Length: 142
Ligand SMILES: [Zn+2]
Image (tube, rainbow, N blue to C red; front, side, top):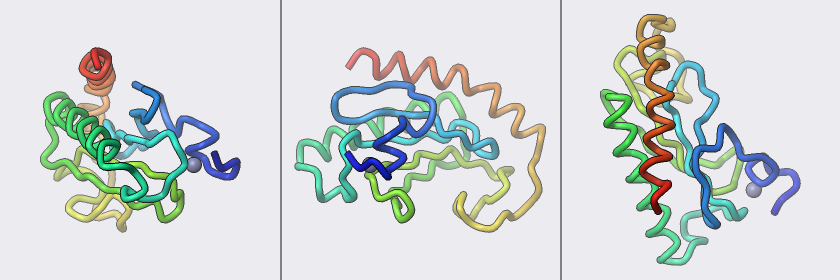
């Protein structure tokens, strides 16, 4: 626990599921509907700080969520990233990407390539309630 760390002091977004080791949140990223994060609960910085079993369980959850995001959000591509340069508390970004999104094909942290496509965003935002429900259904049985 690090009292200066936003992922120790808050969930980091809308909490969708949690167990004793990790949690899945929906990020508040208006340009990227369905942007999820898998956050390790304990304040560790690197994947190599986890035991082999812990890494395997984190990877398992990451892939389960990826499959739900693929099914519900129907993206052109999934981006997975573990950066943590600003918040060095282990978390994976799981981002559904579309050719119409503001940064495609660059990373979501890159310079915008185009203006927001409001029709695209409305269509994708409308899928988010189903995404939340499905993630909770799939992980709820674990
Ligand atoms: Zn932390």
